[in-house]
Length: 99
Image (cartoon, rainbow, N blue to C red):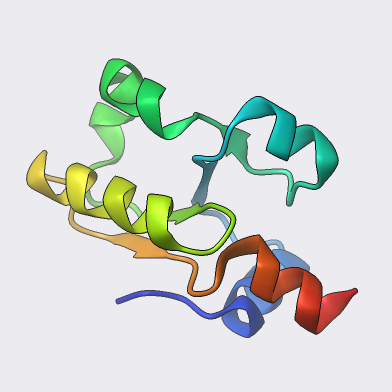
């Protein structure tokens, strides 16, 4: 199940524990970020083993609009990750709602 920007903000404000990954490029991350770990989509296949122990943990992925993170979610699910959530609308939606 994906996650809305409002749900994500509640989780972050409450200090909930989950894995948070930004799949945008470094220049996008430098312009604006939500303090997620930066793993550009093209690097994700090479870094997936770092999360092997977290296949059933909640993982939230995001990008600019939700498209790349949707691909990241699908890729991770194909590799056995069971609780990956895509941020609907991405940082564009976040900035529109919370700036």
